[in-house]
Length: 178
Image 1 (cartoon, helix red, strand yellow):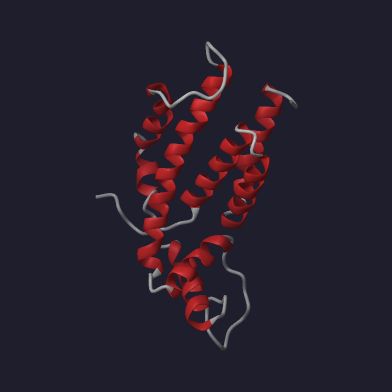
Image 2 (image 1 turned 60 degrees about the horizontal axis):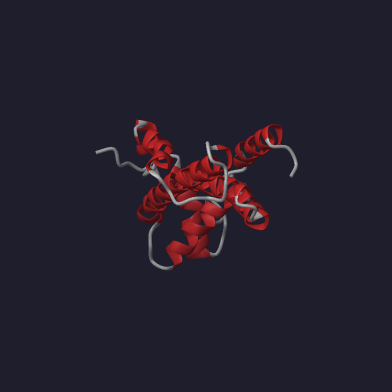
């Protein structure tokens, strides 16, 4: 009942369609002004690639946002697991997922806004997913993967770096440089 495609997503859809069908990353075809009217280059490129394959942005985007939201829930559980293993009552190597690790994802799915925006067609879910992947990779010591995920998050939505930097600064304040 909450599934919808946000009208703002249609801006990205138009850029993606013009790129896929006309090879031009423009909002309007000629005569046109070359104006960059998007801040989500990776999202537009993904939707454009899908359009080349015959998947319209209007149909592909909600699937991508839902998939990214589900992956984000899984990453929240993985992050909780890593934090529990590191700071829990018996610190040690990462253990298998336990019920307590599902508390974060359970809280997220209980927030109507998370569920609603998970099908919106906007790039936000992918940016959140990539930001969480960067945090999880950082916690796991995979710095190259963390950097790649952070770069992809930035290309999806530039303000994602604020979320990632907040995590990093918080981590450095709590744990310090190891």
